[in-house]
Image 1 (cartoon, one colour):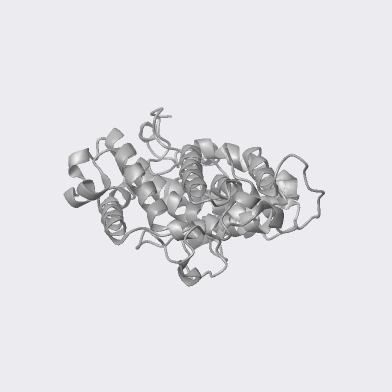
Image 2 (cartoon, helix red, strand yellow):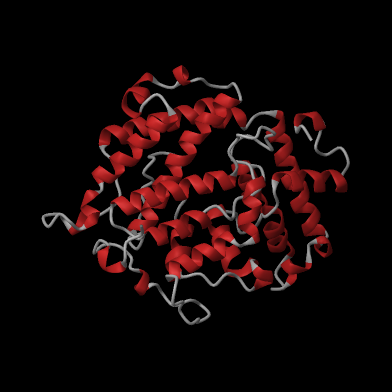
Length: 349
């Protein structure tokens, strides 16, 4: 059962205090503003496309590999558990979590890297997530979300390094901080599972120090991380009258943080970086580059919905290509340039 505003921590963002939308709307009598944002995200085209977007392993054929959608649902579940335990706004974290990866490209982070090189303004999937809900959905009308949800979506990414992903954004809500760390908890653990499905790792390959602290199974690691965050961040509940408001933030204990960072480094060295050098990944980069250049040179081939704002060919090409699913990008590139995808057996299509 979700908590009412008057039951939430004094540090929580209250639903009644949600900012006005860019286009004023009458408030609902049955849903909070953040619940309305959640529902708009779930019913968006960009959200639906997440089911066919890659997490780590490109265009996987196995039924149990993680996609952007299943990742997003895991982030939402972890975020809501933490928020509820800490008396924070569960509706707000749910909306941020469900929208945080809408701007991800086909072929995972390598697609993002390629578009960042190609587009003159660069490319960050967190920024694109906000652009989608502001300008691209509903044929250019956008979803008209609240500022709090869009700010959390824009701020969810973390640089490689400390898993807590320290930020200098003093306005970042506790709810948005929860989604940032829940994102890392989710991908770190489900990527281990996918690597095991692919035969790259087994449980005993994981550093023994990490297994000793976090646990040796998926469920144990998730439980350890979530429980540690709740315990370490208890001051945000507002129930401790002696807490120092200057250090009210979402955090983890030093021991768990160290083990998590070690596990993250292990995954980069043994899964993420090696996977990025496979033939499929090299072909994926070529496909993204080909499609982007094709549409920049031939903007008339970009669907009409991207022409609504009369923007530059590079902007429209970036919006169109970044929204593609893995298989749509593969099929379209092969249709336009037969042979560009290389050996079709690599894609299992």
